[in-house]
Amino acid sequence: MDYLLLKLTHVACAVLSYGGFFVRGVWMMRGSPMLERRWVRILPHVNDTLLLASAIALAAMSRQYPFVHGWLTAKVIALVLYIGLGMIALRAGRAKPVRVTAWITAQAVFLYIVWVALARNPLPGLGSG
Image (cartoon, rainbow, N blue to C red):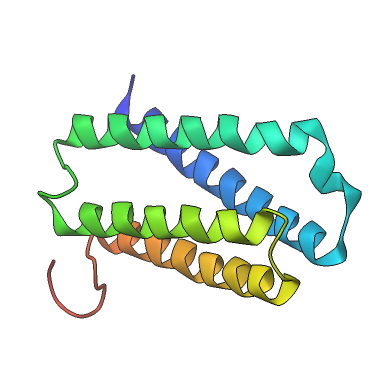
């Protein structure tokens, strides 16, 4: 697959992933029954699988790997944090203030991931990584 097409796929999946997470967070805060819809529970997993697969393919094609390149390591660690926060935010059973805090924090982590991806530096603006 062409690198540019793969990168476009990755970016599109990232945008869809964030958009879906944002909307589901709003539904969570409103107590919307939309969160119980089957497609709402399944579609994010399909998209996130494509997102992860495209990330792995991009890393392989560019020969840049986590735990070798600092910026990619930072993205992977932040991704694990983002997933954990997302699970806290969108799974019922926790107090709503905890879920909202996790949702907001997850968005900050997502923005950090994008920031690192664009700068290819774990600490953009603070020197090389």
